[in-house]
Each structure stands twice: as structure tokens, then as C-alpha cells.
Length: 329
Image (cartoon, rainbow, N blue to C red; front, side, top):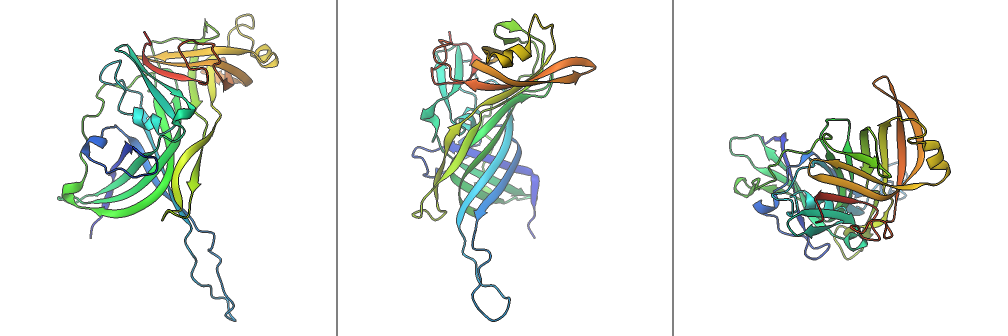
């Protein structure tokens, strides 16, 4: 009997040339150091109470509805081969609506542009058996798009990007031993940690302890009866990015969160770590609370990220954030 070892599970992704048209996956597409992989079928029946009049309680055959799938995973924030080279995990961010820009040899950045609303990918979750000559069991989906969260749980912790994608579930199939994909040339740089950087709000440096940024993408299936799954592909239909920041509380003269909320104050937030910089050019604190940070008073800020509108010349007007590897010049 064949059994599949969860520790061997892999996830492979490839951007689609035509949205909703599945790509053939190869070794070269298995190039991202994925972690914490989960796959969940999203089979939407709706006919499960089907019954005709039989004079008893017995039901009859339900009819299957649309067939989607959800993938989750996370990566560490690691640099590409050079500052001007997109990191391998960049294609995952693109599958969450981020559009990449190369700044010659100095840097590579991502921003949330509407041009990226349907940058779909083909995804394959593969289980691998624990035999001496293993075989695979592959779940494949096309037209995949998703949302992500960038976070650091504390000072010194690794920077993580957590993803959740959804798309049209196309096949569950066996994979022969010789067709199991092989990890090929992933990024090898050590992931960035939340150390040796600066954290500023409105140009003033503060002792930020942790943060979590949610891209806020709403993902919906484009349903169509011409598809066997009932789904052509998934797209972003709305973006509402938010952020939480936990910081040591300074004096009110240095930073007064009550006045900031009361006065609808907007300010640029810049967090740097390793070769990366995260910028929210127009961030608005909409709420705050007090918190205990190792026995010291801290603030937990809840921020709404608004349109750049020319505030930062290095960021597109429509953007609400930028994740930059290296520099723009």
C-alpha cells in the first residue's frame, strides 16, 4: 500500500501567459523555498439536500457545483541573486496582485497596481510517497490569485510573507517517479530579520517591536458554465490594505496617538530590514490601544493605508505601499 509523507509535500507555481489557461509545470518552476504548505479543496455543492418524493426519508443523488481550491504557504523574505534581480518568491507576490519594477542594478520593487488584478498562476500541490522509489499525488489548479501578509513577530524575528491563494481545481492525479519535480536553483540568501534597521512614522524614528501588514485583497472566482470547474480564474475585486504596529510608548510631545486619530493625521511609515524597505506613503492611524511590552508601556497602532497621490515620487500615484529590495537609484 502506498502512503504519502506530509514532510515531503511540495508546492510549485508558474505565472500563466494567458489568464486562466493552465501552464505545464517543470523543474524550473520548482524554485521557491516554500514552507507550511496546505491545500484545501473548495467544492461548492448546494444540492446536498436533494430528495424526491419516495414515501420515505431516503435522499437521492446530489449534483456537484463549482470546483475551486485554496492553497496556503509562507516564505521568508530573502534577497534575489542581486539587488536588481527579482527574488524567486516574487512570482508569488505577483499572484497576489503586486507588480514588479526593476531599478537597473540597484533594486527591485513591488507595488499594488490595478494592472496586477488578474496576474494568474498555475499551482500544483504534490504529495510524495515514503517508498524507496517514491511516486507523487498532485492537486492542480489554474487561474490562481491570492492575498498576503508581511510580518515580523518581534525584534530579531525573521520577516515572513504568509500567502493564501484560490483558483479553479482542475485535476487530482498520480505522478510517476520519474515525473516528480526537482527543486531547481532557489534563492540561497539567508532570510532578513527584524534587526539593524530603522522604523519611522512621519520621519521620526521609534522603537517598533513588531508589525503586520495585510495587503487586503478580496479574491473572487470568475464563474462561467463553459468551464468544467465552473471557474475561469480568480481575480482581485477590491484592495483594502491595513497594518498594525506595536511600539514602545514615547512622551506625548514626541508622539500622541490620540491626537493623530482625532485629527485624521496621515504620515509616511518606513520600515527597513536587511536589504529591504517597506514604505506606506500615506498611512492613517485609525485606532490604538495600550499594551505591555516586557513590562514597559507600548502602543498598538491600527493603520489604514491610503493612496500615494504623488506624496512619494518613487511610488506610483495609485499605490498604497511599496516593498523594495535595494534602492530605486
